[in-house]
Image (cartoon, rainbow, N blue to C red; front, side, top):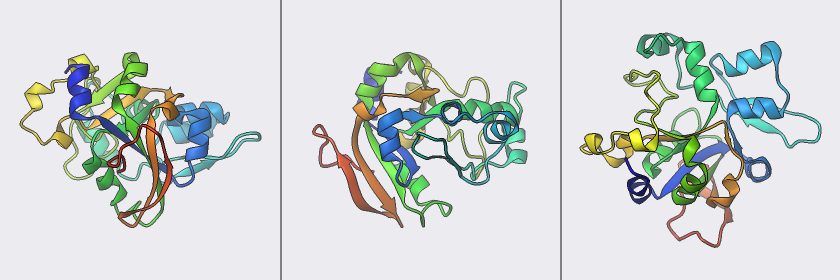
Length: 229
């Protein structure tokens, strides 16, 4: 896949954060779970539990001098199903560490709405970022990977996953998968560790609850009328 194909096919990226997350994201950027644990000084057994095992619930983080943060739950994961679909000798611990080391984006509105409408999240307000793909790719192309599956879920016929699940843009088999629906071709875009300048690429921020947009939190000058989840 070329960068031009990626940007033309998926001109916008989407990220779901916890309600009220936008001020902290503007200040610190979009941080992976591991990056958040670094920032908040979490180590030892607590870090192992949050970074190397399934998180059944979201966890709030606090530290003097910092705005609070939330590490999202991993409700769609099931360890026994994950163990069955892992390849290359990976263990569930390995996979959780891989996921937690990266920042995740959806490439289609269909995918972000699928998550927003999930039973675990639809009753609680969520913050959704709409992001300019071209700007983010230009700034972070050396740290970007693409995935053909929802790597953080083992629900509904879990797909095999391993060392080759995440591929660089140039290595992603976009044309070979072109018979699939657009939202099922490239499913995830991830960035190693964190996107500290993500606010520079955000076009709009919305609050979503109960299957609808309830508030526009922020809109940039470059945003169009269609820039929303």
